[in-house]
Image (cartoon, rainbow, N blue to C red; front, top):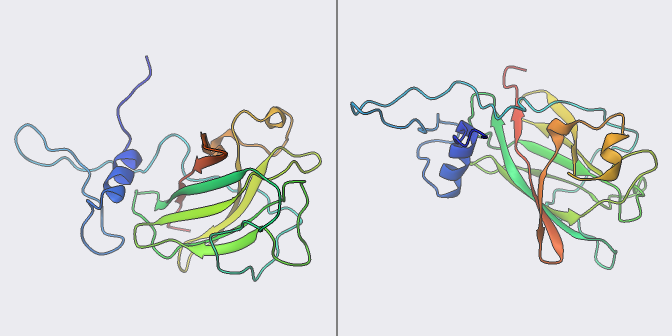
Length: 206
């Protein structure tokens, strides 16, 4: 039987969603449960759900610097299945990272990248709770690759993490030499589109 004990990250996300965390941005989250004697337990030092920290991946040939600041990559009139991606950026000790930069880029519905302009490219910053939200479409299949999103994530004054996000159940996941199951998003159907979730965990010592 699977262990259904909630992880520290899960508890933190629930607290963030309900506004239960108090204090300045980056303050240690008070997620420890009370002991029977009334004293609080020390929180687990790591923010580990079995896949942390978020592993890096190759940038690929199609990154373009200077993307517009936006969380909406939808191009009016373009075909594609709507996709909403949301999540948080944490440090390894489970602190939300405020002001983290996330720069996304991807292929269009046909698997093509815009290397002239900034279609399906944009950057954003996390809020004080470390949250981000992206509105886009499900990317098409690029030759030789499974379906994926590219992203660069950078905590303020820290190194850039370059990585990719993947979709579960894709036939090409098994044949893509770059695919990493630790980078699978949680994806569900949402009306005519899909809703995905992924949390980045950064090594804040880097």
